[in-house]
Amino acid sequence: MEEALTKNETTKTLTKADLNRTYWTWCSMCQAIYSFERLQAPGFLSAMSGPIQKFYGDNEEEKREAIKRHMEFFNCEAWLIGPIIVGITLSMEEERANGLPISNEDISGVKTGLMGPLAGIGDTLRQGTLIPIIGSIAIAMGVTGNFLGPVFYMVATLGINHGISYGLFRGAYKKGKEGINDIFASGKLEKLMTAATAVGAITIGGLAANTVKLTTALKFTFGENDLVIQEILDKIVLNILPLGLIFLTLHLLNKKVSSSKVLVILILIAIVGVLIGLF
Image (cartoon, rainbow, N blue to C red; front, top):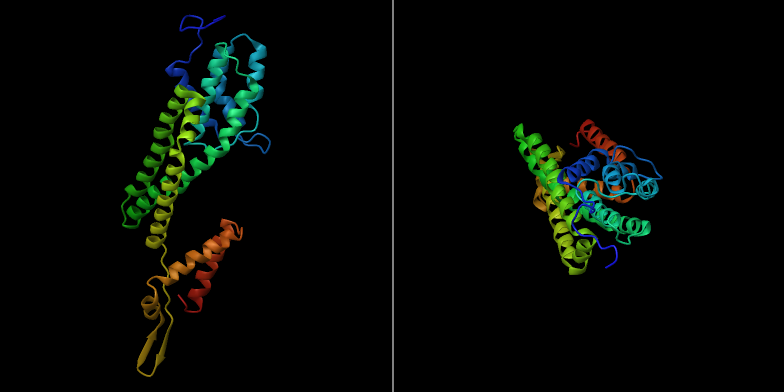
């Protein structure tokens, strides 16, 4: 084949040190510079700057084109999924530098096509499942006075952010875009997302049940007998007040009330309830 490339002195490849530098640059810079026009693009370009220099060297035209395509708008879940797209992009850039007919549009199209679907996966797995599980364990440790609760949370979170994502980054670089296509085509991803969503919902429900506390001090006296409202509510549905508070919060969030306003509303409810003797 004309101009065929083999693993010889003309082949441009990244070393393990190059890959590590790219990964850690992404982790350090992915959310350092934000703008509505580009969002995470400056961080993406920072991660790609070393490989671009190695791939294209003194070819100023190629370097300009690479800078342009990596300064295009980019936004994805940063810690778990973002490194996957960085790895795939590295693979495509390497193939392009070694003579394969990969255009600017091909690389930009892969980044744009993956960042939306994979962002949803990353948000569900990390923010909707793994972090709530870790948080529930850490909170359970903390409420018992165990100082290792926050330490566990930080160590476990960093383990997810960097331990899992580094392996995904290296795997994505090795397999390239074809590996991601295989995952989507196999149908395994849909099953994983369903399971992750279920686990996340169960975890958040368990966390709410164990940490949200609300009781009423309201009671009525009839002669020598006291009618304690909390005892009646517990016989109807145990912990019905915390459940109602959770549903109220969910209702407000569904109505697009900001989390800060919801917090203020809950604080006001607590203050007023204590002042009038309700709580």
